[in-house]
Every structure is written in C-alpha cells, then in structure tokens.
Image 1 (tube, rainbow, N blue to C red):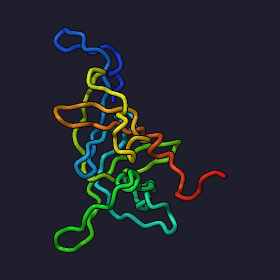
Image 2: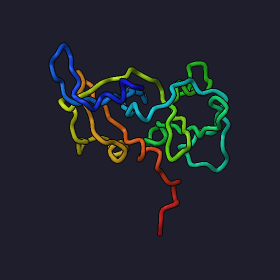
Image 3: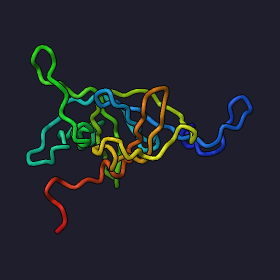
Image 4: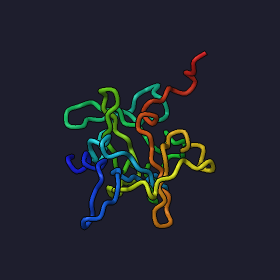
Length: 172
C-alpha cells in the first residue's frame, strides 16, 4: 500500500506537478457508482457461505468466514435503502456478487456490493460538495462527489456507513 499512502504529497506526471490526489476503490450498486477510500479497503472477495443472523438489522446479510475470521456481512443496497437485487431469470434468488473487506473499531465487515470496478486516483479538480439534489438515501453517507466523463462517483464515508444503529433504536 505504499502507492496509496504516497497520494497526499504533490504527485508528478512527466515532471508536471498535479497536486494532491486520493485513491478510491469503485463499487457498483445497480447502475450507481460509489467510491471507498482505498486506505479503508482491506480485501476484495466473492462472499460464500453466508450464515443468516436472526433478529439482525435488515442491513446485515449474515456472518461469513474470511480467512479464519468471523466477519459481519452488510448489504450496501440495504444500507442505502435500495431494494434487493432482482431474482435471476431462472427464478433462483440473486446471490451476492462481490464484497469489500473493511475495518471499523477493530471489527471486520464485509460490504456486499453488486460489483467492483477499478481503483481511481482523483484530484481536487473533479471533487465537488455533495449536491443538495443527490438522492437523500445517499446524501447522509456521502462525503463528496466526483464528476467523471458523464458519470457521478459518490464517495461514501466508511465511518458513517458502518456506524449505524438498528432501526427503531433511536435515543429517547
């Protein structure tokens, strides 16, 4: 991860100063493109053997084994308030496609997504504040957006994403 850590100093391209950049792992939920700070991503894998957890919040898909560790699997679709993926054409339930391993407060989470894209190195020139007209389901979990060749990349705040409370457990 040396390259990821070197991204905050002034990078050079052919001797030209390009300024500070940030690296993001891109993920898809449906057709929407999201970005996660690369320093927060530990693994990219295909989830298998997910064990459901009774009475867990709707966002929690279950538990899985990741190299000998029990990991909480969370659906990014459900966390964003989106419906589950449609069933396959043959009538079988749609299975999780990919997962991103993240850590929060010493605990490992698997963030289940529809697909994983590429790692993008983006500078401040394409960064914008979260637009007021961004889908409200995404707005509270986003830190900023980047405009990329006709697409919008929504950068998610991993702390806010993993720092949720179960529905109905609001403080009095």
